Amino acid sequence: QVQLVESGGGLVEAGGSLRFSCAASGRTFDTYLMGWFRQAPGKEHEFVAAISPSGAYTYYGDSVKGRFTISRVNAENTVSLQMNSLKPEDTADYYCAASAQYDITTARRRSSYDYWGQGTQVTVSS
Image (cartoon, rainbow, N blue to C red):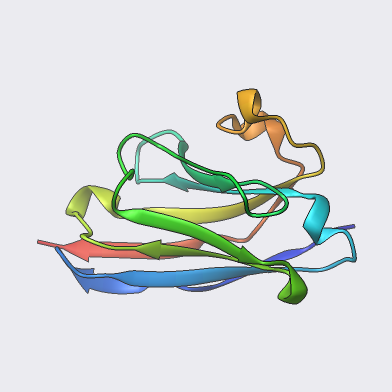
């Protein structure tokens, strides 16, 4: 069973930056597609970013493209999300997720992921 533990997040002013990470258990991390999703109060889950098992390919939601960067260090079983130029609209709970299968056509769908982190709060003030 894969467990995902998130760390980081917090409060930041608009235009600022935050970085947080997700650490995974197990010995097959380098075979997993990793992704980040978010959910703002009263809103549905939204795809944020995903990264292929090797880290060679990354994918971003339209609302964060150019501002957020996803990365991974397979030797440490970690995936990170760097968030720059933050906006109040970025305020949400952010969730790390892992998929045992890599398919770019479904990487943006919550149903593609098998394991989820506990969530990390990000609050952006204006």
